[in-house]
Length: 131
Image (cartoon, rainbow, N blue to C red; front, side):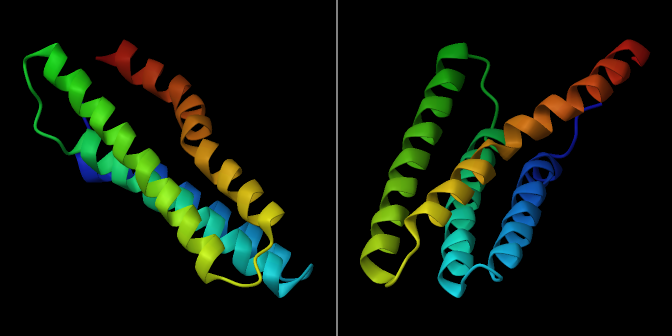
């Protein structure tokens, strides 16, 4: 049974959002700059991942594998450009910024979908065996 594309996207985005809020809230006790830098880093990862997931999961499916592969490549290229633009904007527009908090939370939030996917694998295997 295939999930609705929007539910698939939310399945990856919601854990990213939760991690961003929790880490940012914890860093408020370190410093306000670290907290908002972490929040911005997490939001950069969330926006880029959401863009990619929407492009990939909600795109009209093609019969041609080459067309599918091209759409994945374009979605990834767009994600990279969007991420770069957001980082430039943050470092230019937000002063002061805690670079360590921004980049660390960006990285952890960025890898969250891979962790979620690994955690969902046993469930997926059970669903496949029952079908």
